[in-house]
Length: 506
Image 1: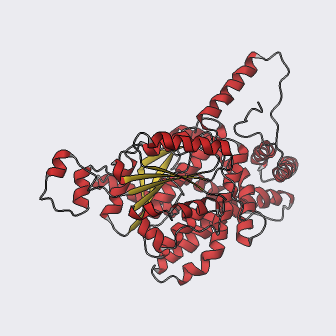
Image 2: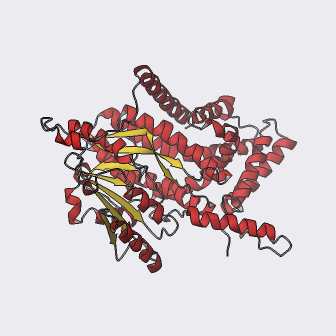
C-alpha cells in the first residue's frame, strides 16, 4: 500500500508539472472572461446585425442559467450566499436564483424567505422553495428543485452551498467553456477560504484542500477529463445532468455519485483553478469530524455500489475504467486512509515491542518523506513551516476516516448519516471574539472552562503510542520514540476535543 500511494502521488505530481510547463510555454490562460460579443460568436449567431454589439444588449445572446442554493438552518450565512448569487454579473432576464430551503426552524425559514423577497423587490428573479420533509437530504432537495416548471427554460445550473460567495464575474468565467465544447458537462472552480487563519485546525484543512484542488483536481481534468464534483461552486449542463438520471440519495456523496455516472456516459469535466469562490472552513472540531465522516464513508460506499457498473461501462476506455477503480477510488479513498492509520499508528509502533519484526527504512522513512514532500507542492508557502503539525494532525484524523471508510465499504453503522457541516459565519464569529474580550475584562470573576468532548478511541491510541514510545526509549533500537511521543500528544489533544474554535455557551 505504501508503494501504491507513493506511485499515485508521483504520477499526479508529474501530470500537474507537465500541464504547468506546457501552459507556461504556450502562455495559455486557465480561464477567460467573455463579454456579450464573444458569447454571440460562441453560439454561432449571424454577425450581420451589429445592433447587439453597439448597444450591448446581451439578453438574446447569453444562455439561461439557474443558480441553486441548497440550505438547512443556515442562520449565520444565508444572507452572504443569497446576496452573492443575486449580485452575479448576468442579464437579469437570463438568470434565475433558486433558494432551496430545507430548514426545520420556522424562525430561520422566515428570515430566508424575507431575504428572498427583499431581493425580488430589487428586480432579481429569485424563487424561494421549501419542502415539507428532508427526504434524500441535499440530493433530495436539489432533485426537487429541478422539477419546477421554470427550470425547463434553463440550459445550465450553477450550485453554491449556503456559505459560498461567488464573485460577480463567476458565470462569465465558467459558462463560456460549456458553450465552446458541447461534450463538457461540468465546469468546477476552486475554493478559497475566508477563515483559514482562524485557528491551527483551519490552517491544516487549507493545506489538505489546496493539495486537492491544485494537484488532484487539475490532474484529473488534464488526463481523463474526469474528477469528483465538489458539490458546490460548479456549473452543470442540465441536459447532461438529466441524461445520467439526475440526483440520487443512495450515498452521502451525491455529488461524487453524479460525477461518476456522468463520466461513465462519456461526458467530460473541466477544472478552472484560476476561478475561485470564497467559502468557510468548519472551525469547530465537531463540525470537522462530521464533515470528514461524510467525505470518507460516502466514497467507500459509492465504490461498493458502483464498482461493477464501472467495469461493465461501454462508453469509456479501459484506461479510464482503470483510473476510476484503481486511482480515484481504491488508492485515494481507501488505501490512503487505511495505510495512514494502520501502518504508521499501529503496525510501526508494534514493531518496537516485537524486535524480531523489521520494517525496512524505505517503507518507514523514505517513502513517507517523499509523499509528504509531494504534498507540500500544493501547499501555500505561508504554511510550509506547519508541515510537521499537518502530518501529526492527518495521522490523528486517519483513525476517524478509517472507521468511516470501513462503515461505507462494509455498509454498517452510520453509513447513511448526513449531518450538515455547521458554519459560524461572520455574526457568530464576532460574538466569539466579543466573548473572549469580555472574559479578559472579567478575569477576576470565576470563568466557565470550555466543555471538553472526549473521544475514547483517540485517547486509547494516545496511550498505546505513549507506551510504545517509552519502551523504545528504554529498550528499543529503532529511535522512533520522538515521533511516537509527538504523535501521542496529538492524539491526546484530539481525544480531549481541545481542537478548533470553541463556541461560548452564552
